[in-house]
Every structure is written in C-alpha cells, then in structure tokens.
Amino acid sequence: TDGEKHIYEKLQAELTPTKLSVTDSSGGCGSMYVVEIEAECFRGLTRVKQTKMVNSLLKEELKEMHGMRVLCSV
Image (cartoon, one colour):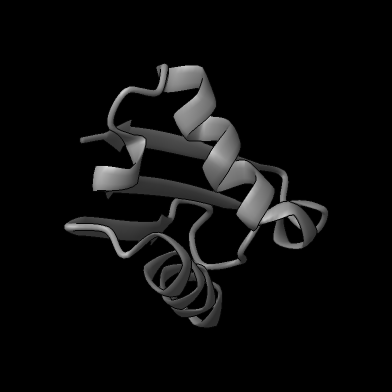
C-alpha cells in the first residue's frame, strides 16, 4: 500500500537498516502496521529505546493510525 511504501522509505532513509519489512495488517485501510527492522544504530540500546526511536521518526504518521507493532533487532 502507499502507507507501507511511505513508512518503509522514511525508515530506510533515517536508520539505514540491514533488514526492513513494513506490512499493513489492517487489510489495506492503513490503520494498523507491523514494522520489522534490524539496524546497527540499535546496538547497545534497550528494546524500549529502539522502539521509541522508530516511533519518534513516525510521530506524524502515528497520529493517523490505530496502532503499530514494532519489532526491532540488531
């Protein structure tokens, strides 16, 4: 979807992940997403701080969503 593409491109540009997957889990309406991201910039950070980093980058997008599940790794 357009929402998946937008989120993917934003995270790719900001965090340069080694792996990234963005899936619209709401059936295509854009209200719920699952983001799986692996990035070196997460090294040494707690899972909470990793997730907060992603959420802060998508602050405006989150206002339009019902929710987002973020799975981070190094």
